[in-house]
Image (cartoon, rainbow, N blue to C red):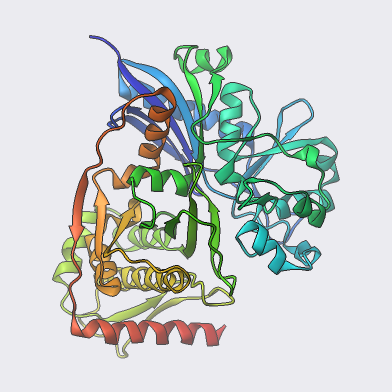
Length: 481
């Protein structure tokens, strides 16, 4: 039997690594995943790092496992996507020094060097903080002289993966949007921003477009994976961007990407910023459009962890069945999601229910409250985007593992009063995004997008009361801590 043409897509998120082998039509042929191992850096109050060499060993092992599961395939190309804001530092010999994830805040102590934050927002499309790559580099310079002395350049994590596969150092535009060193509107590195952080241009790699062919896989990596040395390496991009691409929306659509966190994305043809500096705007991977964004923060991770507490041995289908049979809403939750309109995030959260404890309170009550918290947070952030740039469509798209709950999709539809639509590949949107990018790079036709479900908004009288209770609970937690 002839080998099936396929792509290998490497996806490094905040919590885990996922490697998938997919056909050119988007069929997942093999997939495997593992957790990322983070270490605490004791040089800083709030800092985590990972060992790039160990991470690469994991990537290689997962790729081999996915390829074995896929069977007889001909890998035409490989691409990568990753968490935004995460970077890997390289030394003067091109070796990996240290990996700094998006959840690393080693630069927080030096945020005061940015004296005109509004100017930085104007150039970068995001209010500056230690989340972004430039501040991580500043933290290295100020307190890790050993690493700073060896530092030659840095790459986003997805660009680093492609560097490991091809030997070509580069920085893709959507990932460059997350550095605070990139002029979003001009689509270029920015000398003014470099001077703010006292960083040299020589640190910055060449910018590349998503979908560009970097070259072929190195002989060493081809042999390690057991694939053809003629396989092409294609530039990918940020994980949110590839998930959006995988959904195949149109300009002016809104896409809710529900993973560890939940970005709410409005695709625009113009550079849009918020006078109140509450939102982000970054480059999309299509080369022309922008992603106008608010982020509900840690949402899907909350749902996953509470499932492990209340439903450790049951599937999500069992949860949905119990949610459907739950007769009343017995509690309300506020679990630390982010709202663009708030100046500071919640550091404490929990559940509020009537005392004494009702006999109707069940494990489903807590999960139901969690999903309501996620839906309300999404809607609040959507409303912020809509205030700045009007969304006129009667639908939104959703993708990511966090929206596998039909109950959550119903809540979002009802609160937004819009149809909630998703593709049949919604759970693997970033992988499908990688497939679409590889197809375009190699001149192959993309598969037709299939809409798997459309949830119509249903209005329930008690939703207004529940929404008010949620706001009150959130306010109560903010006042307590």
